Amino acid sequence: MNGVTTNHLQVNLFDVTLNSNKDIQIPISNKQTLFIYIIEGEGYFGEEGKYHVENRTVVIFDEVDVFYGKSGNESLKFILFSGEPLNEPVAWGRPIVMN
Image (tube, rainbow, N blue to C red; front, side, top):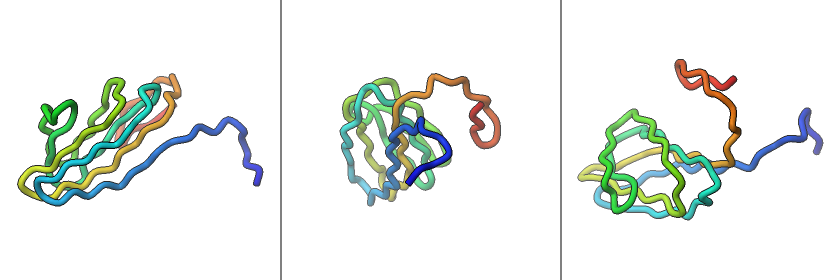
């Protein structure tokens, strides 16, 4: 199949649901940009889960080899996005608007 453009980039999109007090580790290339959006609940992210993040929050991660997330006392649902950086400016709005 041929599309309109030939400059496609591979991206990863994970819809993650964790029951209470569960954790997940996902290998990520450190050359990729990684961010998550918390849909429901709250959790702990980053090395050893040291960052507490609440519902309806976007978290952008620095270079990581492994993504780590852990739910709290209730279930946690989030979407994880990763892919090679576009190196394009972002026009922040509702929601995020790319140039």
